[in-house]
Image 1 (cartoon, rainbow, N blue to C red):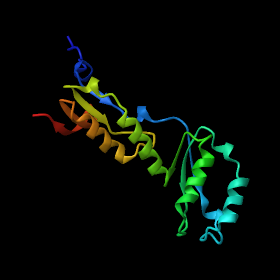
Image 2: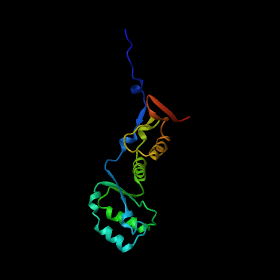
Image 3: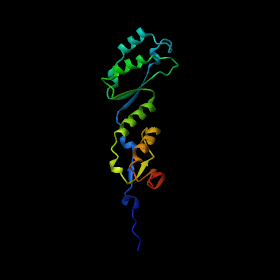
Image 4: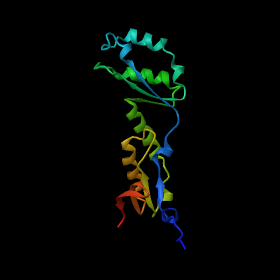
Length: 168
């Protein structure tokens, strides 16, 4: 007679925390202003404002937008503020930087507002594999939020996890 296979992971109090499940839906866009600068290097206010006025801002509706300048131009702060003010009625979020900066700031907001009371005094595994662009910093933010309440924190999958923290 064969022994019954028991899934001990399913029966344990282990909680799997998957950052990918928190991924905010919406298109990610990068707006590079290099082409709006004279010779890609110099911001001439009158010409820049003309480009801003001609641009179709509605194309960023419900998008997350990263504002950047891919050239070595020195861009005054007001220029990015002006762009953000034009995007404000359309975009879900606007940041200065690249897509990784955008993802990091999105996760920072989510993790700061995360209710971790269900993790209190329980073993938690922070799932390591993601099919979406979960930034590395999100894992650091997650351990900072979960560690103070959890009994223990591991990283990876239930079948092959790495211990990170165990309360004494």
